[in-house]
Image (cartoon, rainbow, N blue to C red):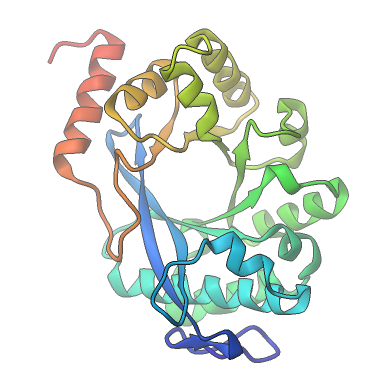
Length: 268
């Protein structure tokens, strides 16, 4: 993938002088309310010249700011191209926006809207994820979020529950979804935090008009606690690892639905 000055480039191949190969993977997001697949998050998986996987943040952090914002744009185009090649439904596609790009790439939204038009993909099915932990410039990020939503995109605040997290703060951003960091769920599963505390946090966010996605659901017991806590959506390896394909294991889907029925006290 060789980038031009606008952040556009081939969706296949290697990246500039680094020689990295960038692969797209999709992880399912499951709706607890609908007991069905709700969408997917697109993730990048860099591979170095020796074929060894590289952590995405390590790869991106090595780029200069200008290269990073162009790469950020190009990755969204790449993910969108792959998703539309596989997609046969009406589920949501979640794309990440790097914090630096979110606060410094003024033309990113228009570029993405152009890419959607080229693919015939509706803006209403797209969700942009931004890191809450790095949202230090409140006004600039708020403007970016208003712009995205004004174009019809949904917006999710990622990794809520880490460092700068505040229900009042995230409410001011006016996002559609809040993705809870996995540490909040794993603390409950290990018995280190009461389920009631997680439930109360989820209720506050929902009362403020945001849907809650719990990330890092790795085991059945964590799915159970997430459902008991009132999460709207689940994401994690229990539902499915990031793969070059779409969908969720129907057996796992049925198990989650059974957990939901039991949580509501409904008959099997």
